[in-house]
Length: 376
Length: 176
Image 1 (spheres, each protein chain N blue to C red):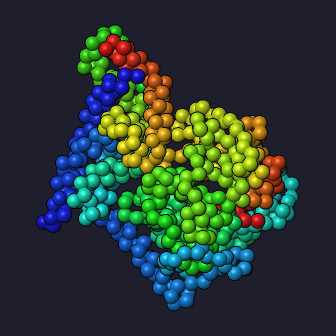
Image 2: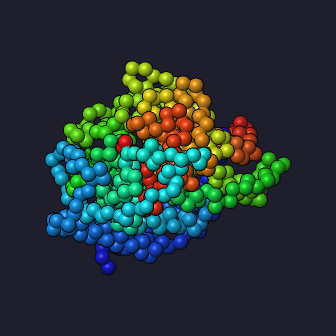
């Protein structure tokens, strides 16, 4: 393509726009943003006060004491009061498999699912859902479209929560903070961390978190030790790990996807549906099975929405797409540490075993949005 | 008047036309372009006390604008509201007249609408704002490799969705 001609035509096209004075509109929007930030700050102050007066109560969904907090010197008090949401009564769908054969609820999902509540105005709340119990186990003051909302993540072992606190650069980066599920407080870990993108924070096991600095440098951070453990471990991109951090799925040189556990590597191929692919910036592995054989693939979103976007499972040994049982558009696919597969659709959540045979369905809590983690 | 506000006013009034031109290429729509620039300027205003004497206010505003656009595209599916039908090209004359130029422009606008937000952003940065790959990467918060691959994909897609446009560009290019 003649790029000079393209330059010329772009310039010509740009001249079509009519210049307008945006001064007043910009100032009004600025004031509105200021009010939103003030509201968020007030909420933070209130929750600190609540914590100081002893109204905050940490509730662990399984009744155990709080897990150890990450080590670190600087602690910010952002512990909000924990609320217990009404416990929903068990739904009939909790005990029914897709085929209609009865399945005991205990055999479907016995562990705890961690959800990020659908965006609220000033707080991001993490719910722990176990059986019919639904409890808020962590809250973070947050603007609904800020860095916090886009980055909040729970470790695969359900012990830690991490997020990027918005800085003043327009919601593109901030400070990496981490806390312990069910325990007040958070620790400041790293500055100038990007908060944009589809998956700005990626866990490698329960302690290690991959983040991207503003400089585009990838940093693997050890939350337990409060230090960087590695710089960019390689040139590969779009990394994600199995729930135990053993198997890595990534794009290697020449955009060739592969899985590796450090001792063995396997290249595979995948061609997404052509028509759909035209709307996206490519695809990536979003979740890896514990044995590294399967990857859940999803579109590479172009923005900060929390959509997982997974829509298929690929067998990396054959490069074939696995036929998943059930109907309807898939929203997310999560391989769990106990070798289950949680498939979320508009119509509900299906639980599959390691051979993708249906075990049953569970109901998505009405208050909850994104599934952040599942701990058996 | 507050001197800081006065400086901001001056910045807005002098730089808005240029910002709107880029925003128009990114969104393909006058109103969306205004919304985009307005939102970016509002964030610039929030940070004006530290930006006003840094000389980086415009770069900052543009960076915000590109990030917001990529974000909005997904949330509102702007691309789907843009006129996406590529008009029939007018053939014949090797010296394009005004009508032909208009058709070409419509074709280009429709073709741009078929690209993803990030692909449009790299094209605008590289071929309208004449940024280097490194500058474009910095503005978009991605690696240089991503800028390269997105540029390549965007150009390839332009060729696919508007072959007559690509043909014209190639023909004219080879004639030079």
